[in-house]
Image 1: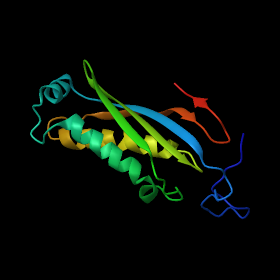
Image 2 (image 1 turned 45 degrees about the vertical axis):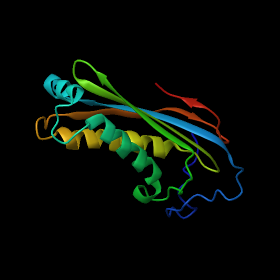
Image 3 (image 1 turned 120 degrees about the vertical axis):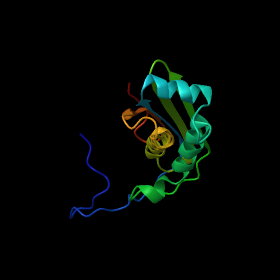
Length: 157
């Protein structure tokens, strides 16, 4: 197993020094889902939520979150992301599937940005629908693809 990179020899938390790493093309894809009552999903699909277009707003929230990951997670580098997309898909009878794709040409990867995008999109769905369904569950947030950089390609499920 690899060594942890965010700690110095004394065990103190540090930001990883990437200044000597070459800028390369890097991609990450993350997925997750929000499970809800069937009636909640039906209302989302019909545009029947009083707060507006749930999936559209969650998409924007996820994109904004990816861009601000370095402000949310200590020791993450601020990155000039070149692409962030979120796909939010109704998965009848009772879920919304979320997938985020994030790209950068830089010295460090974008796994945290993709995971943050999915997480915040899911939380936005919860926030917009909680008045009618407090039993929603955010599930299975995970990295499914990481490509680029020294460690190469990772594919999860």
